[in-house]
Structure formats: C-alpha cells, structure tokens
Image (cartoon, rainbow, N blue to C red; front, side, top):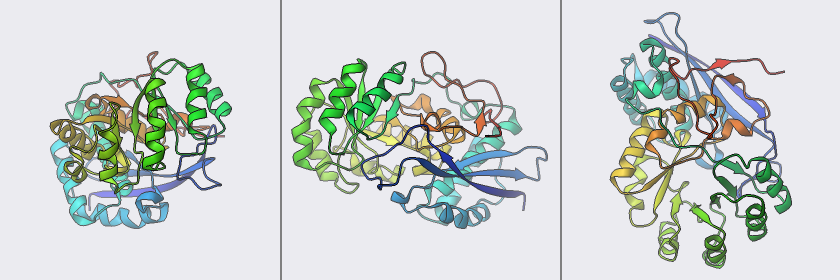
Length: 350
C-alpha cells in the first residue's frame, strides 16, 4: 500500500480558561487534538501533516479517531495527488463510514498538505482558490463579565470579537464587552438558550450592535431556529445544526447563515464544497474552527476566500502552538503565501 500514517495525541494548555455553554466544570484549561503524518511511497521525501480535533458533542474522542484512521486509510487506496484525486478520496471516506468528521479531517488535511508539497503549490492554489481572505475575529469564552471584558480589551486589535454566551450572565457580559470594544460583536450560545431567553435578550443584542447570533438552540431544534429568525433582522447562524453538506437543504428558510468547520465536515475538500453549496442555497457563510493548532487553522484558511465571516483563532487560544509558519497580517488576516502545502514546521515546546 502506497500510503502510511502515524498519529499523535496532543494535550495542549490554553492561554486563558475557555468555556462554552455546554462545557463541564473542569473544562476549558487544556485541549486534546490528534495530529497525523502521512507518507506516500510513490513520493519519497514528502510528508503531509493533518489534524483532527475530536469533539465529544459529535461522538468523537482521541480513541475513536485512532480506531477509525486505519479504516479510512484503507478506503482511499492510492489516490491521485491532485485536487480531483483528493475529492475522490474524500468520497471514498464518506462511503466507508458515517460521521467521524475529525478522523476524516485529519487524513484529508494531510492529503492536501502532501499533494501541495508534491506539486510545489500552497493548498489554496492547488484548489484554485484566492489568497485574499476575510480577517479573523477573536473568541472569548464564558467567564465573569469583568474577566471577559478585560480579555476583550486585550483583543481589541481584532476587527470583530465573538463572545460565548449561554451562561448566567449573558447581558452583563455583552454590556461589559461593549464598554471596552466598539467593533462588531458576534455571539454564540452553543445551544444554551431557550425560546423565552432568546426573545428576552434580542433587543439588547440589537441595541449593542451584535452582528450575528450563532446556534442559540439545540442541534435538532430547526423549528426553533426558524421561529427566532422570523423575529429578528440579525442573522441566525447554524453551527451544531450544520455538520456536513447534507444538513444544508434542511436549514433553508430556517436560518440566514451556516458555520462550516473542517473538523465537523471532514476536511479541506468537504469544507470547500460545503461553502460553495451554502452560497448556492443563499446562505451567508461563517468559516469556524475548533481549538486547533496551526495545522487545522492553516487548512481552514486555505478555503477562507469562500466565506463571508471568518472565525479562525483556535491556535491563538493556546499557551504554545507546536507549529510555526502561519502568521497574521496587520489586519488580522492569515497570510497565505507561496510555501508548498500548508507551509508549516513542527517546533519544540518547552
């Protein structure tokens, strides 16, 4: 078999505690992610790097990723190292096993990194996409309002902030952030609101210049999402309800936008196709991330020209990112240069 793969489970500390509405009491201080290295004996000397962030919300852990990786590798055989060949490999993974987006993502990113290195092209160019991408926002987790406001002050260089709501101090947090930051604010309830709570807070969201509201209700509560969208001009954006491209048609008429994430949908190729299909269905598109290293963020940035809004800050939340090579410009856009593949290097932490 031409392809071989090794994986490593990384446990990485976060710079600040990062909690969302569905976090456990001890969550938010470190993350667990899976990094892979992929080799193809048809192209000796080249190594593709990938990452899959396992989220228990979608039924994945580092153990499930490790268990599924060999099955997915066997399913793709010996793909052509071209954009078209990688699309075929992605389809083969989808046929082989349902769900397991993080495991598929790890292999798909590694394939794109490898193919880019073989072709001596950056991933975005391999896919025929532009290097001109929107700036990223910066995300603030749930905490005491004053703490969130201080983090907002430190992140004021970003053109927009995303704040996690769905806790007990949503209004106080929103007002505290607005006192120190005058740019667009995006709010994400991570399924943590009820109908009554959402309607009660809507006027404050509108008064405080909120740009969008992400996933206020549980994943399968599509009627509730539609009910809320009918009551506000703010775009309601589906995240947990929009896992793969197959979810999009069921959201038509319910929400104004969808949040596409590589770790949910299965990687670079699936994300590009999902973003394109979302535009065909007249959704506004938000390209998001998990708390990933620069591998996941660089892969996401490669398709960011297809998104209206960008939330690619996972690596910025870490105390120390184990990869070098990805940089923000002075407008908080990720630089997509000419380096082959993802353009990243592993570095030592310590």
